[in-house]
Image (cartoon, rainbow, N blue to C red; front, side, top):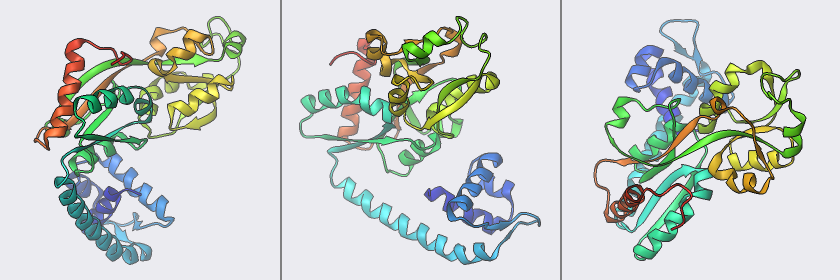
Length: 311
């Protein structure tokens, strides 16, 4: 359950209108409706009677409203207390990132940061939440830097971008791979020539990687059948190594597997969307250690270091 769902619920209870509440919460109406449904699904009850206008709270919604308001107040108070605690310790930098980057890129950055700034520390927080949550964490003061993939399929709105400093520090590709045995069993023109649906390993809905791969799967929807699902690239990689199905994985993550022949890249450059590895932070200064980390990332860009370069 996410805090923004509670704020969404209170806004709709107050306005009685999905469109007005969505405008107030600065989100599109379809995305807002999904968030309300997510809260109802999480609670296991229907909170609003949508058959009337303005929409009305159900009995469960009326019971939940004061509890939601109290929860929001308690969480905001706790956040203020934690911010004060963090302000007293400006040596720690909190990074929210994809699990894949936490395994591949960030250990090298952390090692160099520790050598250059022994008085500081990095707190790396792998995340598999929806992309909105990454930037919510920056704006809420729960993280200092977001490090993530960016692609043409995932765009930030202008209002969010206006608050952020953005640094593109490398490139990667989401490439289709399979075990050698599975690759050999597929036809030469593996996608167009398949007579039976191809088993694939999919990302969980609403994960960041799913947004990147989804247009390909949608375009060829009749060609695939999902046999395994996970929000984590590393989990899909391990299952792919056993020959269970085709997976779209970051090229950086599977470089060693491809070189060793444990996995095979399937042909089709149009099936391998490119992604940019991008760092984000709030433009407003937040402390010397955050500035030090950002300078280290800028140094990598100036030196033209690839994502997998040794430090």
